[in-house]
Image (cartoon, rainbow, N blue to C red; front, side):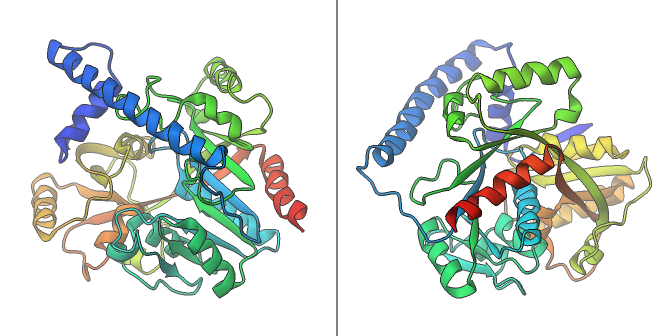
Length: 377
């Protein structure tokens, strides 16, 4: 498979994080990254300490707040898991809202209601691609974006009478009090190379897993029984008490863009179809591996920087590639929300749809969730 890195700096960092054979130049770069990792780690520790020691105030709201996050950067499946737990809360008779940062949107610093639970109110350029995707996937669930989560939390309670809040990507957010921290861990790469950003993929040291009230192991189906046992033992070094459940991503369809815009998610080309993967993700390898596991022949991959906004010039490149290879183009739902303005299929562009479910320990996970708002009542 040919891979065309549209962000060569990010591609080089990915190489450094996932290899053990380095050139002299690589080692110089790693030395610099190690220095910046020290600064980053010190900064995270200082911010956390400021809240823990009471120098800064952790603010509470009148309803339970459940955070879904991780300890590494990207690729664990937070967005589909947030959608799963939103559905669980609805089944339990609750009225949830999702609070997300809205990274990359123009309203990230001011805050905005992305969806009122009935319709989308803003574009990805305003609300951010992940926030708009959640608004699309979560009917009847308000989605609010903005880095000041306490303010959006109060707005969700005031404007929509929500009685439980899901904090998307909130494990490292301290301004808003959480009643429960759910942490996802990639079973195939739990803690990366052991270094924090930018030398590695860790946002915090693994010891901070002790704050988690529920651990969710993802991609465990890719491991043998012995490999999974070792991963679980590794995780338990840092948190011995929190329930640990397993979740799995499932492909529910690969749908032409026009039909996907109409709400369909279950169509699929035949297995063996030649595919060009297009994505702007933190970990595009997961997307490409999912395509291969779904039976498609991935012949080319265009990897852009995470949250990259696509342009007409790039559409022209895609069109040329499709014509030259006879392959279909496949992107993610997160990417599709940014290109859904195309009114017609100018080229064969498909959208891969995925869902996430708890495959082992679902009853345990639901009890942990339910206990949060029962204890609050």
